[in-house]
Image 1 (tube, rainbow, N blue to C red):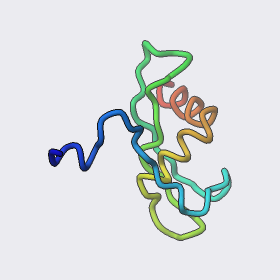
Image 2: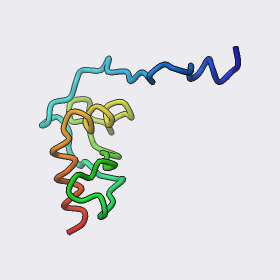
Image 3: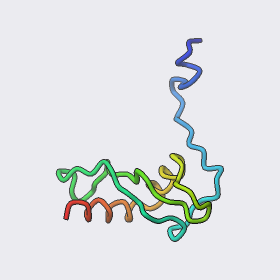
Image 4: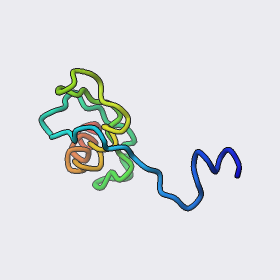
Length: 86
């Protein structure tokens, strides 16, 4: 077994840790968007929340929280992506 098999086994989906308390829409603010491509309008399928602030824990969101927010609130991501082009 190689070093790379240990950190990213072939054939297994990467595991995202959602062990934190799942964020509700009103528990974060100052979301910033990245991956916006105007050619991708109106879907913006590559757009994602790149940073946000966790109001519950009074700190910036972790990478896992950002992934969770992007996957849980796609309509918000789409809205932010659209607004970034205006």
